[in-house]
Length: 388
Image 1: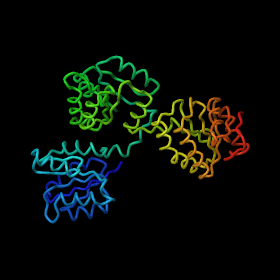
Image 2 (image 1 turned 90 degrees about the vertical axis):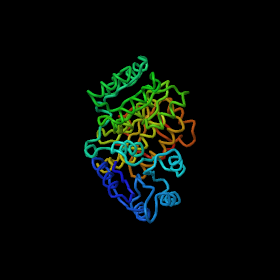
Image 3 (image 1 turned 60 degrees about the vertical axis):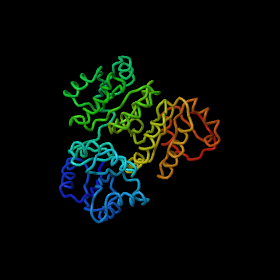
Image 4 (image 1 turned 90 degrees about the horizontal axis):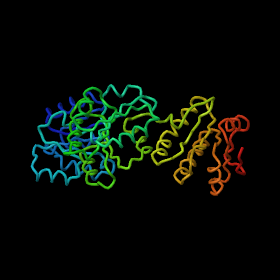
């Protein structure tokens, strides 16, 4: 994703450092020398991150921040303050201003990148033009866990994916593994001895090879103190034990920026097939909803107007699934696309018990649904529920 960063500082040297620091990333830098110019540029560009110096002529950083927080269009923009003082009182003063983070001058480029990356997902420029990887591509997952049963659970639970799980037991083994191969995602047990999980995380974030690698923390659900600490220092996500592997897989794919649409959408013999899996977790339904409109539009642009909504694998139609199916059918109607449904006896029975779904017509197989579309076109309101 292309990000916009606004740096507001009266020091030309600092502005040059900021521009140099981010030039290899997929982002655009805007510069202002005081708060007045900064406010004008912020309103014009609506940046994704503002780097704001405290001490400036004309309008200082505190006043500019106050005006940003009072502006409905700008108040949501994350602000990182730059200060020449790092004392406790000054840090507390900055924190009360409502900023996301702060940096004490002088600072290194690595520190600036690390802190900015906690707020926006920085990507090297070269990655922005690469083909987006999908769930059909291999991914290397490093699991740092001293409990072999957890590594075994993850290996078995993700066996159906092309992802390769590499398990190691401690920080030293993890660092050795990362020196040979850069993982696509790293998972760390947050309760490793001597707080080595957090030492390892700091190493990963300062190592150029793993600086932008998603890092998940593993911890028991009740250990909220450790979870909060991990979130504060920048772990990409927290996974609680016992692990829900289905939900975890969706979160991992999202963190690795994988295209997961082929799990649910495919073109087949002139039809767009939309398939829901056996278990429709909120993460799964969110993915389907995210891809729905783009995939329907893509099918229309390809000259297709037939859609099969296949929910025969769904074990139980819960309310959230209904909430997805209704707009899915409406989107088809809005685009002038004919659709038909494939379901199982359990799904059909459940639909019979809901007033709004009594007129849904289900077919037993994909072939029958396609034949219905080819022969009659899909009606959007049929008088009765039938099984074929």
